[in-house]
Length: 250
Image 1: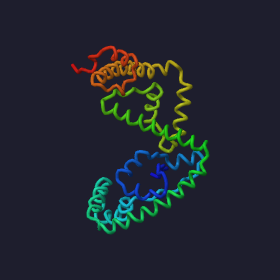
Image 2: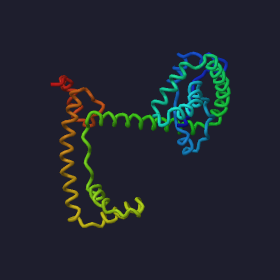
Image 3: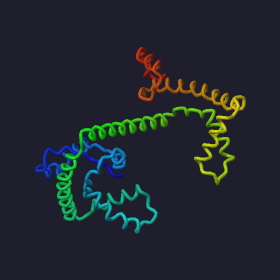
Image 4: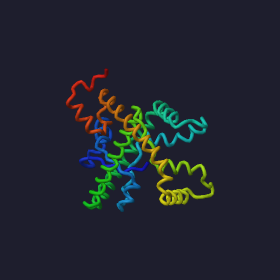
């Protein structure tokens, strides 16, 4: 995916030293900030100059098609392994040539990048920073949700409307667009008498009560195991702070 990358080089004269130093390069990676080109376009901000490919990435692109022809149907993971293996045995002199090309391209990129940065207004920089923070929070939430699932978090039951919708889905006309079908189902639900909605609501409420009971037991178990970041129940968290033995698994 195309990305907007910011690097903290002090000046162009030390570019080669920074790029040639593995430790310095790692430090730059830590300072790197990402925001998608698509996000920039939505914000009305011009696209930044494209960052040059590293020698390894450029090497991988040149031999990828050859790997596919030699091993049809090879998986993405195995393809990456093959590239890594071939890179290890790649001609050292040709590696140096790719590195030299990369350094030259990077110096040109930094010049263009500096010019580009001067065209970005303070308001646009503020928008970029806000978007980066939103992306960061979204990723953190996604990672947290994956952790909850891996720890066996109970699944929240469907609402009364969703139950009705799934029931109607079996009767859906395949020739009808999904958006039109969904709109039609929503209208039918809104016009449905309360007495007809009752069975869906009662079933949903019963499952919801069961879910709440399971969630309470799950969160108590998570507290005993020390997974405080997955707990949403404030009462349980406050109780855990007053109970030193909560982390001990019986």
